[in-house]
Length: 85
Image 1 (spheres, helix red, strand yellow):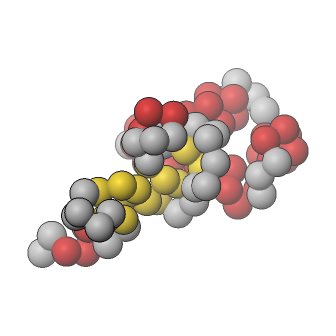
Image 2 (image 1 turned 30 degrees about the horizontal axis):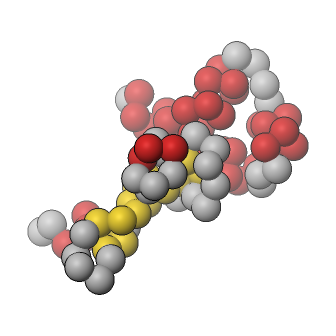
């Protein structure tokens, strides 16, 4: 029952959790931004993108400004929206 929930978690050789991918294109790594959810493989917090989008920036602007794909921007904002629901 618990095993499917653990699949998006990477473990090191000692069995400690190191990286969690709770959503498409999102990772939580305690060594990056103190474990703040970020766009996978980057140091860009998903919350920052969501806040900027809420302030009126379009997906395309965020994509250009942060050198991300539109899909990454949409996934990051989607993750933040799922937390608010």
